[in-house]
Image (cartoon, rainbow, N blue to C red; front, side):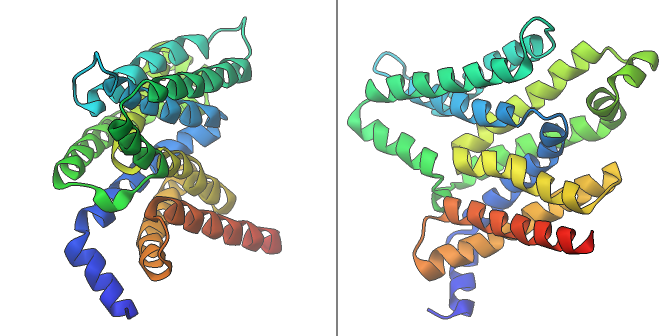
Amino acid sequence: MSDLEIFRTIVTEFPYALLGSLVAALLCAYLGVYVVSKRVVFVGATLTQVAVAGIAFSHLPFADFEPLYGSIVFTVLVTLLFAWMLQSKSVPRDTVLGASFVAAIALRILMIQKSAAAEVSEIDAILKGDILFVTAQQFHLLLGVFIVLMLIHLVFYKAFIFVSFDAETATTQGFNSRVWEMVFYLTVGVAVSVATRVVGDVFVFGFLVIPAAGAILTARKVKNIFLLAILYAAIPPVIGLYLAFKLDLPAGPTTVTTGLVLLLVTWILSRFKH
């Protein structure tokens, strides 16, 4: 199959795979700037595992509801717990995140073991991030979440920036840091829960970290970091899907690996520049 035929196949037969991965990548990249800058990367890792645990819970014999609901409920509850515990002075932040990460993985494994065999294969596909099977309904849901969360962040941009990068100034300006921290983590929780259900946990965690890291290496001004993170996020889904078809590889991991290569090139160039 020629390169032109590959791109034609992606656009005509798998349009929602391309569009869905782009929207998920852009959303995660934007929020990832905050996550990386605040040094709470483990929040992304933990919430993706919690989202999968919620999906696994919805497949248990006594549960009979849409997996997305399980993902959202589990993630939002843990996010509220995070927002409270991460502001505590008595327990170190990395301890909270590490314990939560291990607990989420253990819980996910236990619930998968109790799920029906047919459902386990679906959960396994979510873990691998098989983005080729994104449906129109899933894409439209993801797009709706993207629009709502981005509007929230654009309208309250000043509050999120102050609270995330200069909490003392935020307090002097009249912002309630605890409330805005909770709102921020809730937006991350909703984004992670929906995106994980659509494109998989590896994809979501990868794009919460990789584009933001590349942008921070390249830019110095905050606005430029956000813009570059979005640019870095827009490239890997296109190239990754192409390579997945060309080399017969799973689309999700290939897309994340493409992002890692881009980050490596950015790091090497930044070293030469310095």
